[in-house]
Length: 73
Image (tube, rainbow, N blue to C red; front, side, top):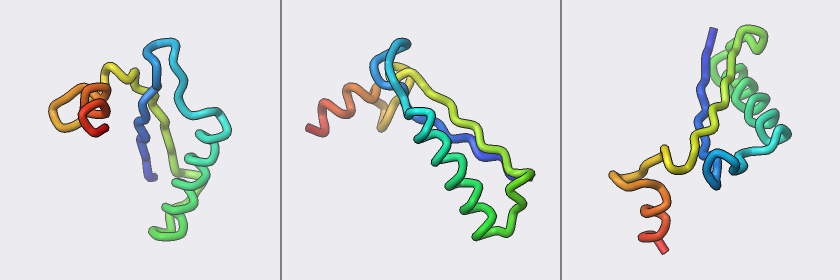
């Protein structure tokens, strides 16, 4: 019984936007299909959870993501 947890940033703080419902559905179908194709896992018992994390709660390389992006530019 596979369990996959996808975490993505929700841009713009608490009122910001993350992936659309359609994009989430595509992620769920894609991950489920991949587990079936590669590992032979039963889609009926495959669980996929998508968590949206506020941008200010995400860090990369020891920096808040906003700072990391600013330095990368």
